Amino acid sequence: MLKGHQSWVFENKPSIKSKAAIVGPFEGQGPLADDFDIIHGDMYLGQDSWEKAEKAFMEETAKMAVQHAGLTEGQIQFFLAGDLMNQIISSSFSARTLNIPYLGLFGACSTSMESLALASYIVNSGGAKYVLSGTCSHNASVEKQFRYPTEYGSQKPPTAQYTVTGAGAVVLSQDGDGPYVTSATIGRVVDMGISDPFNMGAAMAPAAVDTMEAHFRDLQIEPGYYDLIVTGDLSKVGYQIANDLLKKHNIPIHQTTYSDCGMMIYDYGKQNVQAGASGCGCSAVVTYGHLLNRMQRGELNRILVVATGALLSPLSYQQKESIPCIAHAVSIERQK
Image (cartoon, rainbow, N blue to C red; front, top):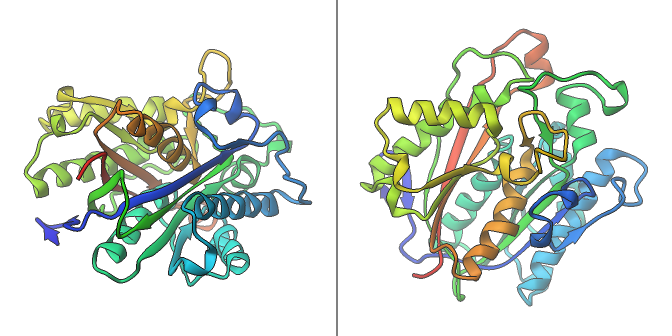
């Protein structure tokens, strides 16, 4: 199953049996609104804190994905999830409610594809029949932890990003009608010395390109193999840097369409999001909502999702550490 140095090829092609994507009110005002299962009008979801609201997003999305699969939670062998809160409490507390054997993960905003890659590995190897994979983020809880509380009202530079409120989840199965997870490339930690938490795109772009380069090298393919390649949440600044690096590394990205989930979910002309979107929920809701819907309609046959993550913490920032970053790539195909 290992291909090259850091990629897996899934011979049994785990099937995405079901999916769910739920977002907050601001995301519901963007161009992808029709692709989400639920758009909540209340950021609190009836809870008394932002963190509890984030947990509620994850719980609801996970339960919906299981229901869409025609299963019960008792039929799911494992739940793989993570988020941006300290000790990944949104996912862990959701696992407490779901009562499914749980593996908690932290890859920052790369967690969507980290969890999908590991879930696919488990299903492909026969370690489980059904695995639930997901992640979440909440604008108010994440901004408070990594930047400034929303209530503070601080001005943000153009390089800053806007954390997505939402959660995405999928159920992977040994059988099904697809789409299918066909391969994954596990990223390396890349740190170019950037320490500004208001410029995450620039920090993460080198990691995204490093993983893409490894994916093409390990699988001995070129970008044109895919109908679409998307990065997780580089947004405008990081997306441009990634394009420059791809050109510098002689990767023919022009063979395909390359976009970024952080640039897709919001309307730049109507929504004030600076460089674009970020957060664990960003690539999760765009992939499990918009992109999988396009695959089901036959508009896309093969996509590569390269979720990006900045592995800093409030403590590391206070100690003046730079921002180590990572990216994980997963290939999803409509047909076996």
